[in-house]
Every structure is written in structure tokens, then in C-alpha cells.
Image 1 (cartoon, rainbow, N blue to C red):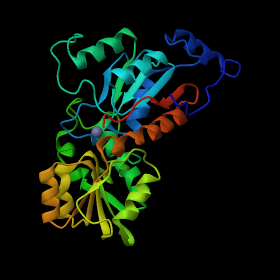
Image 2: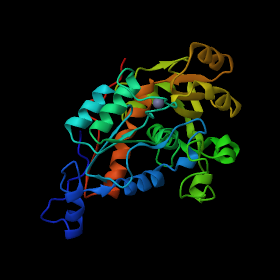
Image 3: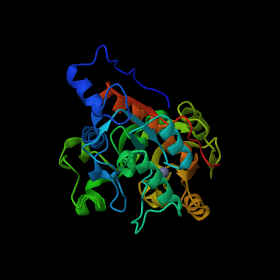
Length: 313
Ligand SMILES: [Zn+2]
């Protein structure tokens, strides 16, 4: 785990902080209540902006428990969980939800049950921001737009026009926890991002800009790298199904992690260059930024991104 912030030592911790620390099962110097971390995560990535089909928020854990170490990752698999256990992590913030679908049993006989069972045995809480983080103000799509140096940013599908604003979050049954969707910041949010450059840019140059902030890209594009593009749509991860929205907004290029062959054919037929950088590459880099935001909010505990996680490809 890369430690983002220096841990406050017992010498300069306050008496009350030390009292909290004594409750911490992870035996870190300091600790905060999981409830406080959840509140901070929901300020960073409000659950009301998650897609209605998603499973976001606290998925495993006791909000009243004390947490001394937090680790972010893209996917909590067996290897990442082993790292969390080794590092005595109290909360894993996994971008991809686990569990994602409803469960009728938790046993070690299937991969999801095995991870949940192991995590619970080690008192590791699991929180997933998923599509709320995709679309947050400082979230993945906006970070990708920042790397591209894209301007005039707005949602590809504004929140007020998406299902979420009508139906709320599927897990909570209401629109967001604690933050009104009428908040000015959230009115600017939605699914994906669209923006323009001051003047057209070559696709090859865009790949180079992305490479400055993202490691391990496996770049594929349906168009020639020398093509000049101006209006760009962005949906991280598996965003191929959003091509129609990007085409409808007359995007020259659609950036995503991965898309199907037929979605690529459709992009080509509609004159949109489909630029794919790999699902892992399009999202994993952002978990370091999420760790930084949490570390800033909680300087008294250790927060960092997973060091062991890598793409399966
Ligand atoms: Zn993803």
C-alpha cells in the first residue's frame, strides 16, 4: 500500500484521538468511526448520482466500528484482499461493488462468498462508490477529461434527464443520502462527460496526454491516429453502450475502457472514433486520487491505494 499521508504519531495525537485509537481492532495509532468515513465518501461521490441499477455504499461492515487504515482498489479480488489482510486494513474502498448481485448464501464455495467470508473474518469493511465515483465532480470521467485537457465540460447525460433523478438510488430507495440533488454541484453532474478543445487535436496526441497520467493502457481505436477531433465524449469502464449518446451529441471521438466489436462497428458507421484504453486502465488510476481525497479529510489515519492490484490482461 502506498501511504498517501503521514500518520499522526501518538506523541502529537490528542487525548480523545488516543481514546478512539484504543478501540481500534487494527491496532493503528489513530482511528475514526466508519460512519465518518462513509459520510466523507458520500460527500466526495454522492450516492444519488449512481446509476439506478448499481449497488453502491457500505456493502459489508458496522458503521459504529473504528477504522485505522483504509485502502482503495478497483476490484476486491483474492489477491487484493490478501494485501488488505497483510496491511491490517479496516476499510477497503473497492470501486467495483462486491457483492454486486443479491446473494442467498455466503459460503467459501463460490468466489464472491469466499471473498466476503474472508473479509468478515478479518473485520474488513467494504464500501463501493462505483458509478457515483465515475460521475462525481472529482471522479473518473472528469479526471480523464482533465488528462485530455478538455474544456467546456458537461455531463453526456445530465442527471436531471437520467433515470436516477426520478427513481433515486436502488440501494437506499431514495435520492441520495444526506445531500440534496438540488445542490448546484450535482445539477452539473450526470452520466459521462462531454467537452471540446479550443482547436482540434490529433487522436495520437490525446493518447499521449492520457499516457501521462495512466499506466498500462492497451490502446485500440477504430480510426486513424492522425484524425483531428474536437468534441469528445467520455465514459470510463465498459462504456460502449453509451455510444449512441455520444453520437447524438455529435462527438468526434468517444473515449471508454472497452466496447464490443459491434459497438465499434456502429461507432465507425456513425463517424465517431471509438478510443478504448482498457477497462482497468480507464479506472484504476483514479483510486489513487480517491485515496488522496480521503487522506486529506482524515490525516490522523493511513489511507492509500492498493499496490498489488493489476489488470488480468
Ligand atoms: Zn469498471
